[in-house]
Amino acid sequence: MIVAMQEHASEEQIQNVTERLLELGFKVHRTTGTIQTILAGVGTPSVFDVKDFQVLDGVADAYRISSPYKLAGRSFRPEGTVIHFANGVTVGGNEVVVMAGPCSVESREQIFSAAEKVKAAGAKFLRGGAFKPRSSPYSFQGLGLEGLKLLREVGDATGLLIISEVMEISQIELMMPYVDVFQVGARNMQNFNLLRELGKIRKPVLLKRGIAATIEELLLSAEYIMSGGNYEVIVCERGIRTFETSTRNTMDISAIPVLKRLTHLPVIADPSHGTGKRDYVLPMARAAVAAGADGLLVEVHPDPDHAVSDGAQTLRPDQFAEMMREVRAISKAIGRQA
Ligand code: PEP
Ligand code: MN
Image 1 (cartoon, rainbow, N blue to C red):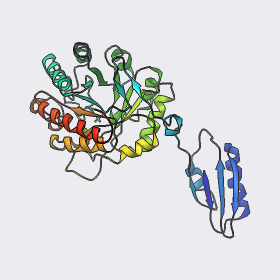
Image 2: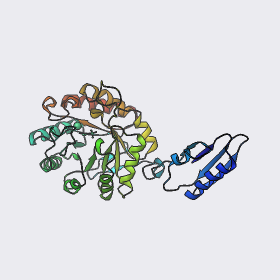
Image 3: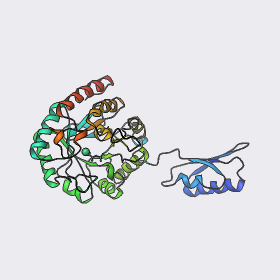
């Protein structure tokens, strides 16, 4: 941490800040300039808040120079994390992995049809919500256990890996036999109790960025899971809420290279929730892959106009097949495979 003292800070104020740094376990290196004193706190105390220093008497500003997330930070594993699945699929390696399927599991016919179509186009994972976090309590809430059973059945029949959302702690055990990846939705990104419990399991977790979460907050949430010993976390940019109303959310493409720099975890992008409109999904999918995403999470339905949730942002199978063709071309152009 760097603490820059005000130009005419007194010796007493400088000593006070120095003592506070020492109390936290920092080694202090002082530079006394003709008009300003700079204190560099070197070391890695487990917890401190830079704001506590910014308000001390005589301080002009204080900056953190190490990241507040140790396990999620790039330096923990500079080479990057690659998650391996039983069928040989990897996430975070050279391959750009596509996870696709309907917003919600609706029926046997619907999920089997969706699975067959996304698999034919090249998806490696089937997505589908069995527990749905809906903005209105009157909207469809998901098929629950019945939906999970359908997902497992279709996963086993097609060889697709299964990803589905977990909304609360009590669902973790229930879902365990049915899913290959637990999805934590945007609304639960800071459900710290849920994150801690997911840290105790040994199955990958896909953590979505909250609608008003900073990148640092997303990585601190990943740290919650990792601090329990579960290092298989995938982070997902899915759009954030801004003043713009033309799209459901504002897809933060720049978060992708920022995350790739800050963390070793695989980074994927969800252009469906990122835009809310199916016409914009393909261009944002292209952009996300070009920006360095390790994969995509995309909503696809055999008949999106009759989908029970998120139909407007859901691709028809033919649109998804076109997306996959373009994603493959872009991946190849940047030295990756899809
Ligand atoms: C979803 O994937 O269907 C979903 C609810 O996503 P999010 O949590 O990003 O809104
Ligand atoms: Mn959805």
